[in-house]
Image (cartoon, rainbow, N blue to C red; front, top):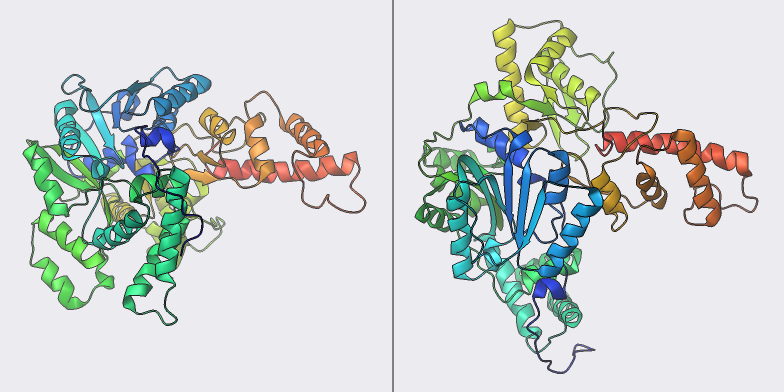
Length: 531
């Protein structure tokens, strides 16, 4: 029925993360800046990022920690992982970038035992749900033991009810590959059997429609994710309330979600909204019913020490100590009408949008888009918005309006808030310098990490070649000369040059220099260039 199914094979004892490497990548929601912002908004006083101590449990090859360590040179960043090969790769990356504050340890979590209270931020991403009971218990035990008094722990995990569907598909794939030991064959046959099942009917019913949707997710998933997440013999989804109970058993308290977004009221029926309001201040129940309503499969939960008193209400005054940033898709010119009562929609480069008709809010959003990628302190943003709007209801009223805008934008995922300013270059310099982490990454993959800890795909070979040259030793003319040489060698292909009569040297150089300026501006907007 399925071509190429191997005979029964002997399963090896090799660490599966050594057998199939899980390339590390940056997860923006795990960055201590985001954790610190949410902690402040809910009344905690986490330590400043510039000198913080970060621990990642199950850090892999350090792909999530490497960019943090570069952007926070005064912080102490520590990672631990069971895979010796992954740790060796991470150490090689730290050496290549020249990092002295990144410490990667090859160790079993069951034996890893740092000093009590030794970390301000603890990260356990993609570990909890894929480990035995004893290790899950150890993860939360380490979070309690190692967490500083005002610290924050981030733990991600698979959740029900959504994972009932994922588990159904996973169990069918595991049955099909149960006698296959070789990793590539297991992945190929897992995809093959799901495709067979999903496309088995001429007219799909509800069940097969679900399978087709799951197949799309599996096809989009990387081999490493499929192998380690879906074909892992151990997986342990839980209901949210079960995870909270487990955390409470270790004297940890639920703080928030790292994604800080809930269901918007306009997405629900009035009766549903009314029923949820009856839950009052019962945060745990509200979050659990959120999962029931959305079919949630995955959570990124923040925890703090149980002795901390929380009221779960956002503290408006905390916003005045933060910085804000907004990457607009197309910032409008300064002469745009910001003072009228007409409604304007501001679209971000990530596809989200925020709409307002209030002059002060429009002016603030416009200013943030104009100065991007630089984050703006609250006081500076208030002054700029009042100047642009040339209207207001008094200093305190304007400050309250701006706090409301930032809180709403952050909750909706359109505005980013920060406790610190990353070392981004707001403009292209005569001798541009790209983040050394991005230059290291681009030599190995097409995906690089921005200074805001977000992933950026660079599919264009010329852009990748240019990024690798941005070490501050070359001006724009020298960069163009390097690209000309690469084009003549055939290493890169310049659009418009593959004609019957290729351009001469001067014309080629002119084309490359023009494209160079546009690409450098794109790098600046992507927050890859450093001061």
